[in-house]
Image (tube, rainbow over the protein chains, first blue to last red):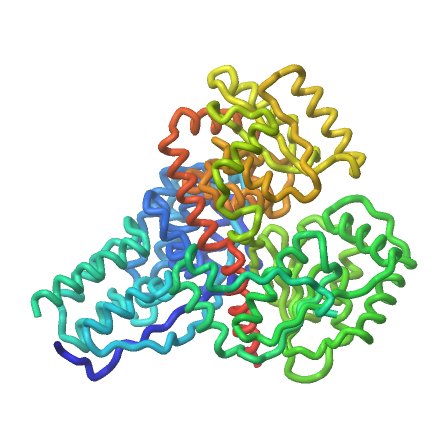
Length: 219
Length: 409
C-alpha cells in the first residue's frame, strides 16, 4: 500500500454566527444587501447553510432561495437561486456576482414584484470560522479511511465542502490529497462527483468509504 | 457563590449514544486550547427561569472539558427585582414609566455586586440586563466580557434602553437568540440559539406505559388524532385561535385538541385567558384544556410524544423552544412565523408555517391527509434540532466564542 510523503491532517471547524447590520424586506432590498454584504455573509448563507442543513436533500440549497420561496413567495426566482451550485465557484466574488445577476435580472423583468413586501425580513449574518486540529493524520489509504470514519459532521463539511474556497480549485481536500499524495486520480475524481445537494453528510461519507473500499480491493 | 448553586451533572459521554463519538471528540478538541482558562457566568437567579436551567446543565459539561468555569449569581433585594422586572417588560415593548429612583436602585445593586463578585476571569459572560452594569467593575488586563441577552430587544422602551445601552456598548460582544431581537450596536453581535437538553425529563425517551397513563389521566383517546399546543394560558399564544383552527379541521377529520400549560392559579391574566378558552371550547368533549403544575416536565414530554401534530400558534413569541422540544420528538409542527419560530421551522422542510387561523387549519389538514409527509417533516425537524438546538451545540458555540474573542488583539 502506498504511503504518502505529505500526510492528510484531519481538522474540524466551528462557526460563530455574527449578526450583520443589513436586512431585506423586498427583493430590491435583497439585491442591495447582496451587493453590499461582506464575503463572510455570502459564505454564511450559501456554503455554511448547506453544511448546517445537510439533512435536507430535497430542494434546500441556500438561505436566499429559501427566503425568496417561503417569504417573498416567488417560486421562479427561488428556483433560479437554488440552482446556483457552490461547486461551480472557487471564489465568493464570482458567486456574489451570479447571485446579484439572477436577482437583478428578475427585478428588472418583474418590476411589480421588486418592491413587494415579504412576509418576514431576511437578516444578513456572517460566519466567523475557528478551526482546530483533531490530532489525527493519515499517510495510507487505510489510515485515511479510518480518519474519515471518525470525523464529525463539521469536520467532514470542512474538508469536503468549504475546502473549495480555500484550495481555490473545483475539488475538495479529500480528492486533492488522494490525487496529489497517493496518485489515485480516478478515485479522487469519483469522490469529487458525489452530489452534496442530494446526499446528507452521512450518506456522502458512506459513498466515499465505499469508493475507498473498492480501491482497496484493487490493491 | 457558585458553590450555592446545585448543578445537574450528566456526564458528557452520556450524550455519545445520541450524537455519536465524533461530535463529543470535537467538543474536546475545541476545548483543548481553553483548558484551565477561567470563565465566569453571571446571572441574577440560581433557580427558575430558562437561563438558570441552561447554566445548571452547561456549567458541569464545561467543567468536564476541563474549563475553569464558575457560575455566580448576583444578589439583589426585592426593590431591585421589582425594578428589573419592570425593565424586562419595558424592553419587550410594554409601557413603563421610568423614574430616576429606579435607575438609582439598579446602579446601587450593581455597584454592591461589583464589590462582592470576583469578576476576575479571563472570559466573563453576563446574562441579561440585571447585571449588565457590572461592566463598570471590569479589571484592567487581558480579559473578555460578553453580554448574553435572552430577551427580544426589537421594540424596547426608549428610556430603559437608552439607560442600558452605554453599559452594553462597553462589552466586547453581545449575543442574541435571533437577528430580529438584536439592536444596532457598536460592538459585534452574535447569534446564540437557546437549547434543549435531550437527556432532561422534558425531552428524554419515555416508556409507552407512562405515556398511556398520562393520556388516561387526562381522558385523551390514543386511538384518535391528537392536536396539541403546549403553552401557558396567555393571549399571545392565541389558544382561542387554536380552537378556531381545530374547529375547521374537525369538519373533515376526527381529532382531539389538547391545550396544556402551566397553572393559571398564580397568574391573574392566565386565569382570565383560561376562562376564555373554556368558553370558546363550549361543550366539545374532544377539547382538553389542561392546567399542568408549574413544573411538570414528564407530563409535557408525554403529551408531546403522544401528539399526532404539535401546534404553536403564537401571535408573538420569544424563541419558542417548545417547537424544538416537539421537533426533537420527531413530531410534525404547524406554527406561526413569529419570533424565533422560523429559525426552527424551515417551511416545508422541518415543519409548516402559517399566518392565520385558516392557514393553520389548512396546514393541519394537509398533514393529516399526508402522514408520510408529516413523518418526513418530523424526521428532518429532529435532525435540525440535533444540529442546532441541543445543549451540546450551545456548549460548542460558547467554546467557539471564547476562541474567537481571545484571538482578537
